[in-house]
Structure formats: C-alpha cells, structure tokens
Length: 368
Image 1: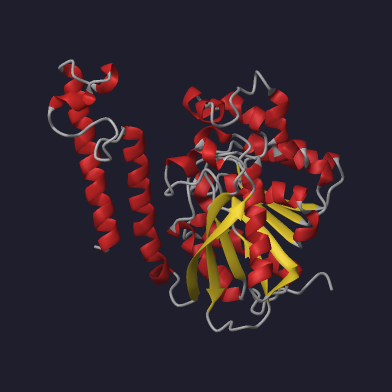
Image 2: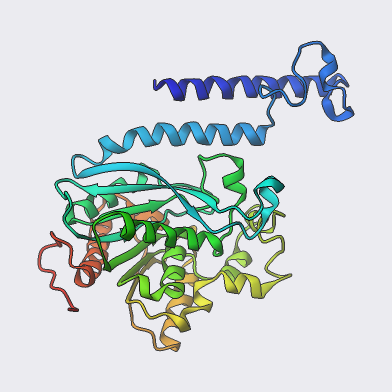
C-alpha cells in the first residue's frame, strides 16, 4: 500500500473511532453539544482532529479512494500515453459559504489531469477537454477506455476536476456550482492546454458524458471561439424538467445553502440559466449528441428536449438516440459492441473537425 494512502486510511479510522466515541458520549449526556466535550478526561476536545464528524470522514474516504484510483492510471493507459496531475485555477466562487472569510475573492484551485500520447514529443497536436460526469464525482479510471482511444488517435487531453468534484475535501465539494462557474473551470483547463502544451488552438474540442455533457454544451455556448467541435453523450440538459422527476434527496443537492439555495419551483429562471436546452439559441460550435431511451439517470426526455430546441433554433448538429442500449446511462463507457460502435461515431465526428494524427479508418476532414 502507498505510504500516503496508508497514513490517510489510518487517519480516517481514527476519525471514525472518535466519532463513535462522540455518539457514545452523547448517549451518556457528555457530548460536546453542551460545550463540555473536553471534560471527559480522554484529551479529545471538540477541535481535536481525531474527532471528526461523519461528513468530514466521508470526505477523507473520498480522498483515499481518489489517491488509490490515481495510482491506477499509468497501468490503465496500457502504454498509449502518460498522465500528469495539474493544479489550475478557476474564477472565485459564486457562493462563498463553503470557505473561510479570509479566502473571499480568491480563485478556486482546480485539479486536472493531462494525458499525453506516447511519442508525441513537442509535435503540435489537436486537443480535447474531458469534463467528468456526476453532480459530485471525479475523473476516475472508469474513463480509461475513452482516454486510451483518444490517445491512440493522437489527441492531447486535459480533464478538469472542477469545483464540486469529490476526492479533494469538503471545501472543494461544497464549492459546487452546477451549470455555473464550474463551466468556467472546464474552460480554464482548455486555456491552460493551449498555453502550456503544443496544441493547435484552432483544433480543440470538448466532450463529456452526463454532467460532463452539460459542461460540453455550456462550454460550446459560452465560449464559441474556443472549440472546433463538441460531443455530448447522455447530457443533463434541462434542470427544470430534471427536478420534476428526481427525488427530494437529489433536489436537496441543489437547494443546499452553499449551492443554488432555492428549489426550481422557487426560482425556475435560475435553473433555466443552468440548463443547456434553454440556451442553445446561442450555439455556434458543431455538435453531436447521443442518448438512449432506457437511461435510468438522465431521462431521455431531457435529450429529446435538447434536440427539439436545437431544431427550433436552426442550429447545426447531429444526434442519435438509441433504443434500449445495453447498460443504460453508462452504455458508451462499457466494452460492448454497441458501446464501441457509438464511441466510433463520436470519434469520427470529432476527427472530421479536429484532424488528429491517427484518426479512425476512413475519416476525412470536413473543414479546412
């Protein structure tokens, strides 16, 4: 076991032991709620780091999982390239509730991954920005099959762990700004890529799945001069509709005081502002969208609403909604024939516009 991981795990176990002790103290009337937590004689006062809440223990566990998963990346690339961890910055938070007042106005630190094709050297290549999915998730090795296939084609890839991502502590988690400034974090990764790596700024694309699809769509809308192509699969597209079919626990992630702070019923305009389907009138970037009718997370009605809006506004796009694709929401990230075919359609679309060194067989560039 990695020494850092082992130390983190030991710290987590100590935190959980302390929390269990707190619960026992509470049952005996000696909990810190009355201000006397330090009077038990065990030396563990209310600010002792070994006595963390279950919320903090949850974030420590996420950090351990993230560190362990990071260690897997070099092996999961199967020789197609290399990975490097970065620390970038995005704009200050829209809601400072998650941070100390002393940090007010400071930029948000955004971890990211840089994936470089084997043998690329200093050769100028096209670039791709890959935001991960999930309200609270991260760029784990579940995306390894996609990253390998992109590296094989010769793309330099950057994957931002935008605000709200897991594995970086409670503060980063509670800086979440779904459809808000997190979108700017993804664009900041794009800017870093073209400024620090030999990437042709005219051949940069963005692609993502689920919440990463929302990032893709909003980046294409908000930064049209930054991207030559965009691919969104099973994208979250309409938060107003989404809040209608999700449960209270899901809605609570948005209504938290450190996030939107209100429900879609209370402020529908705010939820529309964060929804790509309500903003596609401004889309200029070539776009392809995929979905499936059996999606158990992003109901197909969101993708259909997006497609209808694109058509109504006369936007240029391609789309395909499959019938009951095996795997439902994650169908394209699996090792099935349908997944491989669907990813190939996406790669063809991107290659035609970004001209990678080793495009899928038979692809011809559609623009000069």
